[in-house]
Image (tube, rainbow, N blue to C red; front, top):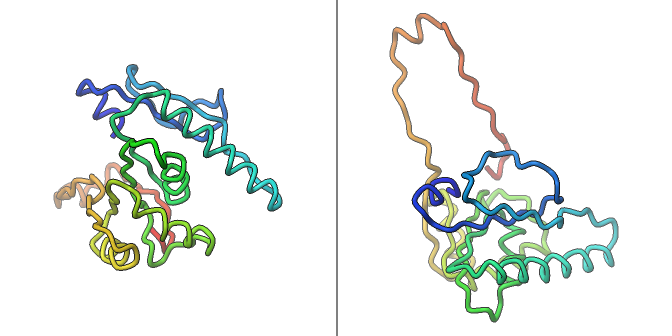
Length: 178
C-alpha cells in the first residue's frame, strides 16, 4: 500500500514501533519517510505495561502530528487502539484495518474492552471478510467496510502441473484468527 501510494505521488510517512537502526523487512519507495519510534519494548509487570503504553501514546501522537497527515491508516488491533487513543482531540481522521478475524482472535480481555469502546472513534473500520465485518458491526454499532486482501487468483495450466519444473510454496500464519 505504501509503495503503491508513493508511486502515485502521495507524501507518505510510515511510523513503526521498531527500534531505531533495525533495517525494515520490506523495501520501500525512496520517497517514503520511514520513522521507527523505538516503542517495541516488552513489559514485565503492570507498572511497566502502564508506563510503556503511556510512552507509546505520547510518542505516537507527537510523531503523527509532526507528519501533518491528511489521515492516518493504522493496522493491527493493539496498534489500532493505541493510534485511536493517541489521536483523540486532534481532528485527524483515523482509518483502522483489522487484520485478524475478531471472532477467533486471541485479543486479551482488557484489549477487547478497549477495542469495543475505542474502535467506534475511527473514521472508518476496515476488515478483510464479510464475517468479520458483520461481527464487528454488531459488536461496535458502527459501519465496517470490507476490503479483501489484494491477492489476484490465477489459473494453473495443466502442462505446468505435469512438468513440475518449479514448485512455489506459500508460507503464512496458519492461525485460527487469520
